[in-house]
Length: 474
Image (cartoon, rainbow, N blue to C red; front, side, top):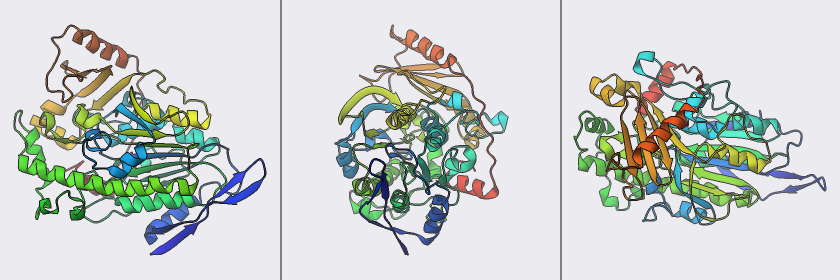
């Protein structure tokens, strides 16, 4: 492999002096090295840019909160927990949706899916997913115009490729052409993502950087990692095919085979242990790269994952907390270490990033403290099945106030839960006196949202094959 050694230079305006930061040696796959070098060539490096903090946004694709330390009882992610011990830990963070595209779009725009337009559609529309509305500004545009170097590295090429609109405002965007791990595992593994992130942060520059990093390892299909099993004896000789999972969603009350579910969860936890090693390696290197308490670092997930709860599996099918409760850790100015019980969601992230940079907020971004989530249908491959279409052929909206949560469907149905006594959302509380006003407030809040028209996404044969390998299309 090529060895990439770079010295990060920081321009000290007051003294016009240049200080060489410690060297960080990074090994890259040759093809990744070439792509990163070409991508970084598009970052304006010749002249000094803005003076301000580096901003690092790390998204762990498909990581549910209750499997991550310090939220989980066991230390399944000890390195992340160790880093989070000096961070602001948000105990009530939720995703704005239960799949990748709308959640990332909200992280970049500060708007909900209805507003930014990046979400799914009905089978009748013939459009599986809309991209980000070209009319909606994104945080990378503001930062790049203000002098930040903007670099995105995304392992999830399926719905984070440039055509979705999420690359807008980034000088360098690595997603579309990153070589997958293998034919069976259609994404680059965490080690390569970390290496790319470290190399990007090590590149010579005279301006602050906004670095977005997306890890895909917790998404099906898993890379089987025997060494990361809690008990190597549990490593399966043959893993049950994930396609068996859909039997659990084809009829109400059909439970997921516990042997199959346990097998998947053991594989999922093994990927989290591996992911902890790789994200931990990136986080532990940040001080060596000069990223300290004056810079902003955010670690979160785009959505969770179901393993049979509420009669479903995977994600992108509902808005229960196994699908939308996410970890969220923040270090930087204005974020003291400790636990935080405020209700926050993905729309808060752009505000925090722009506040750290001392820049104006994006027009139309959410400014009040509310917690909403929405899901526009589900994958078309499920909607094509009459039984699944009867369950998933709808728009869902969720609203959380204090410890109470309402989920309303476009079919007219609604569910209400008291999360303080029923965190698993197993007992519908619609009969409680406080339930009808909560549902009414949900509808009022969503009626206040403006509707954005999403951008068009077309799929090449290669794109379709990639989406098929991730389970999105048949």
